[in-house]
Length: 391
Image (cartoon, rainbow, N blue to C red):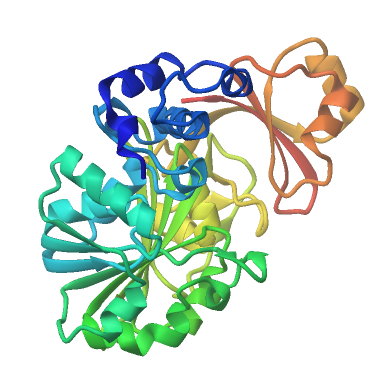
């Protein structure tokens, strides 16, 4: 960590070159004797990545940025703020602190937070930024989080861990037990130090596999931002034997859509042909697989067991997109071409054999506009097109 990067002249240079071509800038070399151009370029690249992902860091003067990869691996502000809603108490340990985004927001909900980060330079950077951001209740330790727990007699209200999904031997990994630290192997240690665990996992992991590999799982949270699933959060409570709750959240600009159900309840769906309105679940619900629970709780009908689209004669609140159905008809590319040739429409496929590109090629429908066409399969296993508009 080169603190000369925090000097006024260097900071001004970084801010003035946030939109500059980096390869060209590197060729010119550094204008400062005590700062090399590679460090300046890393600061520029990393700060640029924070503009929308971490606006608090981007707009705060005196923030020191790590390598761009560390920014890419960090949580966004909006997902970190959601995590902070799940915890409370006096003492929390972030076992895999990294750049410190999650720690910063979690620290606002506890009296004292310990930030563990095995990378000494990254730990130093995080500590510097906590001071700049005014997080006075965060204590940074440049050590492996598991080693810290093994060598302390203390107990804590919460432990937070975000296992690394990169391995020196296997590259990018996708199985829970291949991540570092291996929470499956260390679960007994974790529960001996705290009654409450919050684990952040990749959204590509299979929820059923995760729940079965861990114990005392209390809640599973699937977090999406603007309908893109970002995180899978596991809440574990020591000795919990209650049924697991699945909670989905889609964080939007000024609002959020949430849905909750009990894991593996044996809920069933009702089926129907299209009625007056069409409902498309958000990405978090699709990831959670709560298709039957949605039908049951909202009293809506599925179009097909595998289509995951719902219909009703009533316009209701729904955690996803809502449409008024204008018409529905069997899939016939030639007839559709006559109806929509040269026109614009937004095309979505759900449980359908043609791709969007193939449909556009066959029908001549251009992209865009205010009308929507859903290509799907109905309850009678027939290819179906639903023409609708947003409500």
